[in-house]
Every structure is written in structure tokens, then in C-alpha cells.
Length: 557
Image (cartoon, rainbow, N blue to C red; front, top):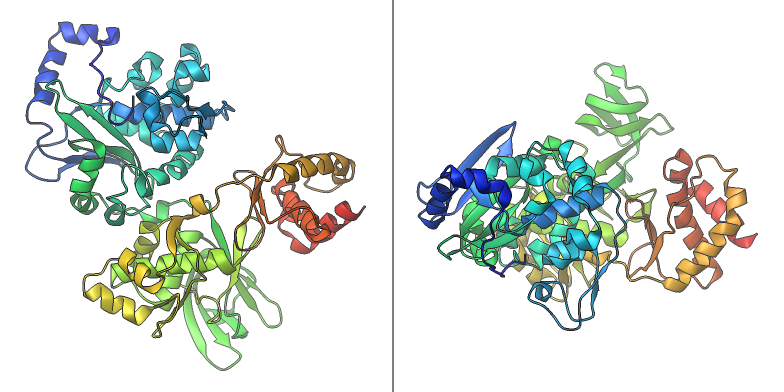
């Protein structure tokens, strides 16, 4: 069922007993009455469902229509079972359902189908999902009878709200992460595009639209906050209008994410104090031992200055001469540390603008090695706080999750504005005048486009390069079998055209981003990134010198 298609309600035999007992009739009267007059939101945290009315006193209904949310559970099933279903070819003559899938003769992938709410893509019949296989999968993950029954994957199926929230909470972490990534497009380009500047992009949701028994439109969204807290939102009107109308109130009503439980798949390696050599590191009155830093430390610099820091195990001390400190952080954790060091989080809109500028700078300037960006903590790049980030800075980073500027070389400065350069001082003043972060970015980077990391890393495949690598990898295999940690890839990686920045490999999606493959240096680069994938579970996979020497030998042999 698609977002705006309102088919007649169909009877479901599994609910016959309820209807005979009169329960369903009472429920339909409620839905036809005043339940949807106000907007409601509900979420599940610590095993308890909490509800809020965004206006008025009406509480969230106990039973809600599934609407388009059924597609989210099919998506999770496909992701968690590592299915390799065929892409969907949109017919040349569009049906009502196909109108939301794409242009005639367009081929769409699973992620695109979820973001666009393409019902034909997720048809169990098209995907050859049998009722028994579906039931076996969900029996181990939920007690909800409606989710175990593949015949209940219908937009007019009405389900207990508590059960729906638990089903979202029990989705496998990897499947939830994939769904979150796919649903980013829903917020920025899809049904939530009028609301995303107020809701942010850390929240991810699947929209739904349906109608009650009286024919009144109802709609909303369900998904997860940045920390994985599942939520549901419903109001009168279709999903797009409901989100636009209630975005500000919804953002205020939802609970703050618990930052300590957020999980990130993107990471940044930082060389701390790149321009200020350390002399010694102390823990209390004793020199700190090499290894991961946890607790309070005093850093003594060669220039005579000192600094007290708190570490949480994500930084490491090496007792070289001089000593060095490195850190590995999730991307948003890193950006929050940049916000705390280069600005502050007192003006939320200015902090959000700075977070996007800093994220864009990393993407454009940092090296991407071993699955993480690598950058120095320095005034010539970005200064990074060695202390845990403040809640306000984390909120700014996660509110703008995945957002980047494209099309210009991004810079920023504490006080000076310039061409494609944000002034932090000016941004704070603009926030005081009521500007939001999007307006600040448009002012500072008028030629830039605000897009997402996911969109910027969409794969424009280099088919000839894939063919060359597949043939080359087969020739390399006897030699690589002797290398510690080598694991042949089950499927050849996709090779994608790189628009800007340094070549890199995406270890999650088994992709390689390069500019070309025809010259000797380009082929060495391609082999280099292939080795990062084939050795990703071994320490050798993070040894740049080892990888580069091996790649050169393979290509030149």
C-alpha cells in the first residue's frame, strides 16, 4: 500500500473472533470519532510505553493502522537474512501502486524502495517469501501474532501500539542500522522534507498514510530516535501534511536521546596535539602507562604548558619520544568535540551549522584508511577537544547526522567571514537574530548544496574497473592465500566513481571509491583498497605501509 492510496478496508479472518465479541466494532467507532482530532506521539523506553498529546488531552490510541509500516518489516527480514533479491523494474505503464516507486522503466534498489514507499518491491510473492519462513523468522524475535502472520502485511491491518513499538525495538541491530540509512532520504527528500529542519536527521522514520472508518485521512511516522528508542506519531491528515504541521511540537515532545547508547558505524582517527609536542603524561602523581586512557590525566607539553583531561578509553597513549596520544571516535562524537573546541553549543542553531561545516571538512580533507577517516588535531585542520563532548554539542552533531555541504571547498574561522568560509562569531549573532542553521549555511556557502553522506557516496559503478579487478583478484589469489588475515570476498566489491576526496573502501557495503583504473597508479590504488576489504578482519588490514607494498607487488608482478 502506498502513501496516498486509500483502498477499501478489507476483512481479515484472524480478527473474526474479535469482531464477534464486539471489540472491533467499538474500536472502529473510536477511530471514527475524536481519537485523531489531536496529534499524539508514543515511545518505548526501559520497557515502558509513554504517550504525549501534542495538543489537547487525547492520548494515543491503543490500536493503530499499520499503513505503510509493513514495508519496514519486510525490509528488516531481507536485510537480516542477507537476501539477494532482484531490483525492481518500474513498469512502462504505471499502476497506482507504481506511482510511488519511480519513473517508468527505472530500476530501483531495496533502499530506494523503502525511502519511496514502493509497495510492489516488498510484495512477499515477488520476493518468494513463504508464510512458514516468515513465521519462523519472527517467532524468535517477537510475540506479536500479527507480525508472524505474513497475511497481515496489509495497510489496513490494525495492531496494538505497544506491540508495534516492541517490534521496532526488537529489530536486529544490523537490520535497524540498514533501515535507518535507507530512511534518511525520507526525511530530506521524501515525505518529511518540509519538516526535517525542525526534526533533524538523527531521527529516522517510515511514514504512513491511511484513513479511518469514516474516511478521514490519518497519517504519521514510526521509527527510531538517534539512540534507537522506537517511537510512533499519528495525526489527522496524510503523513506529509501531518509531519509539516506538527514537526515543532513533535521535536519538543520526544525524549532526549541517551548519548551513551548511540551507536555509530563511521569513525575518525585523531592525532592529538599535532603541533604541540608532549613532554609527559601523568595520572595522579605517577607517569601514565602506555595504552588506553581512562580517567583523569595531566598533560605536560614541551613548551611548558599543561592541560588536565578526562578520558573514557577512546584515546591511546604511546610512550614514544616524545609521547603521543591518538583517539578513535564515532563521527558524531568527533564532530561534537570539534564544536566544543572550535565554538560551543550555547546557540543550538550556530552549533548545528558548525557541525555540518566540520563534517564537510573531514569528508573533503581527511585521509580515509582502514575504514576510518584520519585527521590531525591542529589549527590548520580542525581542533578537537580531548575531553568528552558536552550534551549540547552531541545534540548538534546528531541533529545534523549525515548532512554535508557539496560543491565548494568548505572552510570556517572563529571571527573572519569569507568566500565559502563560515564565521563562528557571525553565526552566533545570526542565531541570536532567529536564523536557523540552514539559512546560516546558505549565507556562508551560497554556491554549495546541502546533501547527505549517503547521497554523496551513492555508487556510480565503474563496470570495466569491476571486470578488471575480478580477473586480477583471481590471479592474485594463490599469493594472497599465504598472507595472514586474507579472506576472499564472497561477492566482488562494487567499484564506484569518486567525485572528490581521497580513494577509500567502504567495509560495510563492500564498495571501493576511486577515480579510475586505467593507469598503473590507479590500478595500484584499486588493489590497495581491495586489500583493505580482503584483510579487514586482521591487523594487517589497517597497516597502510604493508597494504601499499603488497598492492604494488600484486599489480606489478
